Amino acid sequence: MSARLGARDLLDLVLDPGTFTSWDEPVDISGHPESYQAELRAAAEKAGTDESVLTGRGLVHGRPVAVVVNEFRFLAGSIGRAAAERIVAAVRRATAEGVPLLAATASGGTRMQEGTPAFLQMVEISRALMDHRAAGLPYLAYLRHPTTGGVFASWGSLAHVTVAEPGALVGFLGPKVYEALNGKAFPDGVQVAENLVAKGVIDAVVATEHLPQLVDRALGVLVDPPAAPALPRRTGALVERDAWESIVATRAPGRAGVRDLLRHGASAMVRLYGTDEGERDSAVLVALARIDGQPCVVVGQDRARQSETHPLGPAALRSARRAMRLADELRLPLVTVIDTPGAELSQRAEEGAMAGEIARCIATLTTLSVPTVSVLLGQGCGGGALALLPARTIVAAERAWLTPLPPEGASVIRHGDVEHAPDMARAQHVRAGDLLAAGSIQVVVPERDEDSAADLAVAVAAEIGQALSAARAAVPA
Image 1: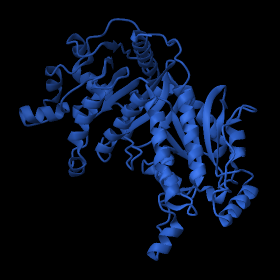
Image 2: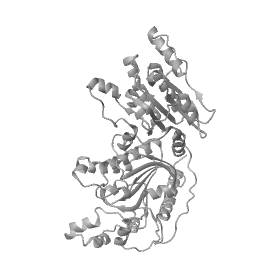
Image 3: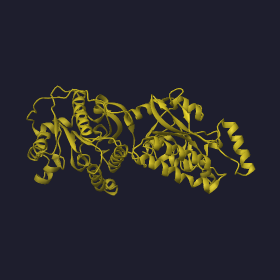
Image 4: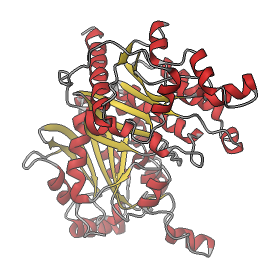
């Protein structure tokens, strides 16, 4: 782990030079017992700060942002009443001024010298943060080593985007306390930032020196206004394609997927991992991004990460619902990308509420207050596909398709074998062109036989950009 930066050093690293303005009022310690006052004075001398948090406002690449930064050298970054009141005041001011909030934690939690009155302040911090989020304002958190206790269980776990320092100890209960209470050591490797990313609790591990770039990318999506779409739209008549030929084509290894769409059609991307509630399924990809200049939240089924041994499971759809909630709260358009051979069929999926997750995705997507665009990019099989489909605008690639079951499964039901799968595909009106003719989708992007994955990705991204731009223009000023 790199050398620990103090709170002021971190502010100097992240904020544009000379732009930081402190919001902190002097701390009055006169009401505390003399012995505790002596501790506070010694802590201030050691840390070079008057409390365990510094707050204020500055610029990140010219964008205003409010900051709340822990100083660990001040009594292990613990949060007493004065520190908590300072945090609450800063969050409330950020909300009133309409600016994003960036927090950097490094704390052992509640300050034991102040006991329950300090402990209860975690509620007020959480209340202020939820009001900030309810105002549609972004909240980013950087968890530094260590972040434990009441800090992790309140403002360390309430951000839209949460990243952590490499190797940071991040956990609810400090390992020393656990060992003292239970007479055995806490298992190694659990309360480590990298493990929490793998488990879907936080979004990423980011080296301190790379934090400014991450904040810049995130604010580029969350704050910067949309640009005019610039990618060339593809024109031309659709080709009368055989349904089975389309199905075979979308199963090919070189077929464009959601990663190609983001790689060639998006910018300022920030990946988010998992549900932030302890689940992660790589079959779904979630990101903040700008597609053809349009800021949005993207949730896409990643065909490259789905297989017979790793199908699209319930956790993937819970990650999708996290993306939907983020879009609604941040007042950003949502783009869903459908490309799946089907949802998981197993005991684990049944007990993990697969059917319920499909239903909840559909229900959430159909009731969002922000513009929504669904992209039928390739395979669209069953409830797993339907879960991400019902947007206000649906764009499909020409060879994309949608079925209630894989054609092989439909063939088994109708004929008792899989040999009739091509005939079932032709009979079930599965093609994008069929869906367009029925009015079920709005746009079909023509495909060319010579298309590379990048070519198709750019063509689809252009239609997404147009749809998002049109949706924005339709909203009354």
